[in-house]
Length: 331
Length: 299
Image 1 (tube, chains in turn red, purple):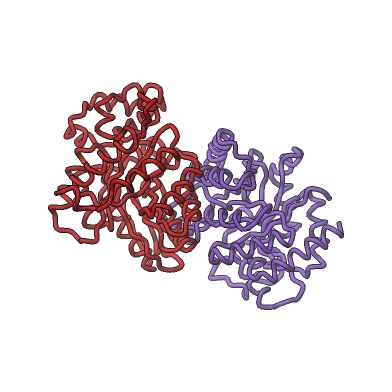
Image 2: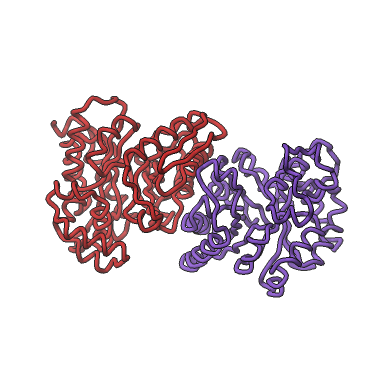
């Protein structure tokens, strides 16, 4: 596939660990450059509420859509349904609901270890689709129990699935309106190949969540915040994906232990160049974007989500990265 | 009588537009606070609270009553932290065990209520301290089991309106002891219909709301007041004696609110949350605001 053939869509990503101010800045940047969506990931142990955060981001723009990642293994499914509906009632049809397993922290925070993740996600998608159409749902599965649950109206809310595991990809392609991939680059590349090869609805969206760290001339070292993001991403990646990407499992196991103990100082030291290169795009804005865009086009990715940490000054880094993207991404 | 607070409880089964208009009306009328309730099939309260904060300037906003059985304490803390970050320190919180039937319909069971309430409070206090959130944490309670743990909270909101019943509940529980601490507040929330022009239709709605309070009342409370059996056999406002229903809602002409508040104030009650159907129409919110202003003059 030639680089010149495609225009790749750009979205911005943030997690609830970042101040609301940054989300608001992203919304205005997205408006200014006519970007797709602001995707907000839920760090379940983070101090901020993802639904209220999304509302504040949507309030800051009349146009941009917000995507949220929520785990039905963490939130009651009724909470996901009505918060999504509330967002649509207040802000119009600008919400994309992303369902995923949640972060590694899920086991520590909720005591739930989802063993049949895809079954659970499929059940959640099915139930939410009926609820959003205005129907009533009764459900009794190991994870979800609803008895004639319904909302006050019907709502148009596309449902995306957040996928880190290749075993889930085909199912995800079949049940979701869109799939967001996160993990090491080889996994995203493989998933994109599969996406192009299998027969699926043409309207299905495929997005890659790409952590980025903008570095400037005087900054030779990648900031610790980038190492933290990479550590969390590696820890959340299934072992099979890590192995397939040639990553030393023992190293990631140490990262996981450090994260469970919240020893960020230790974790940061465990993140080496290999992990950085597999999970992160980094460098000066123009160079970073050139490489990222080339990679996305080569892999036939329709859209990417620039993800944090962005850099020591996230607003500046986002502004420059988006500007560089606009310069480079003419079809 | 100093330190009295008057609040309006809002229902999130109304559209967010209506909720915003009614909050604006409450602030304009001089009420101190609005409460944003929570039910599993209604609008998400933190987003409603965010909208209210955006549309008003000074009124305090209470999130709740919320059930920590439905929302983990970390999630409740996140709601408050986000609101405070966006709008400043204007928020309070009220925890309740929750409506067993409603929670059961979304797969949530309420076991070990006192433990869960205290455990949630502990997590909330720790998180609020870490995040710089200054919010009062109330406990919504009625039965003896929950009232027993209320002393750890900033205050207790008792879901009753009848002065005699409230006195008996306070005197028969550790709340009486907790009230010796000046920082500990006792409030009440109840279905209310405070009016300047009587409308029998709204009175009937208030009786219906009172019936729901009876249905949700703890068995221990009903037993204590010889009201067991009221809810057996599909009770309705028409087959429960009116004098019983009257004890579970407050329906008064505006000029008589002062007497009620004076009686309650004499018992140490300082927070009054007027609930549905007081928020049914903006006109009723104006009636309440008028009654509260008159009450303040009267006192």
